[in-house]
Length: 273
Image (cartoon, rainbow, N blue to C red; front, side, top):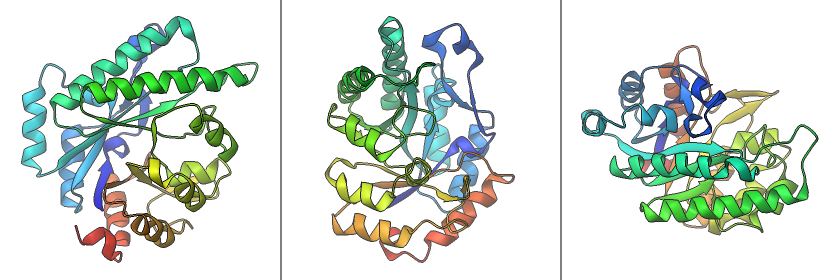
């Protein structure tokens, strides 16, 4: 297994304000320095990085500069995280257009994965038809990813209509997209990460690790998640892809990355890469 880190800790998770009035410009964004993030990630001992779509798109006219930054830090560009509502027909075309632009740039810059979250919760609650709409939209996302030689995976997330194990099971029957389990979001949604990994191991091409305790997302080893067993299960099914540590915010982003890297140093399956 190869080990990566997400750049979103540097600056915390926000969204592009243009998205309030323009769906095609509704990107995730970390309000920090990508250059600093990549330098710190490399110095903390990680091999690769994941980035938000909004931070990647800041380099849309400076692709060679971005690729040079990656080379300077001796990192692999693992993938980009994006998302959408996906259940409202009137804006779906705009959302998919945004995602295609992100996928095209990510591929050009050397990424391998397209990670997507979403599935809006309506003000009057979730409709059963929303899962059909979400599944169909994610199938299109998978096709877009394939067009640009990327691997698409769906990331269950709090605040979407796929939080609980029951909701995840409902969606996975309706779409061909791969699954990116985020261990903390799965637990926060009422699930057991190990059970999810065992159930969907053949559709897991990418993994997010994040620790969790009493409603807080934490560096690895500071919560109570059983990463030893999770990694053992992944090893048993011959998973040899990327495992990316993600942490939405931390007072000292580099220190947070170092804490998780130190915790993972005891796992042979992570270090023998």
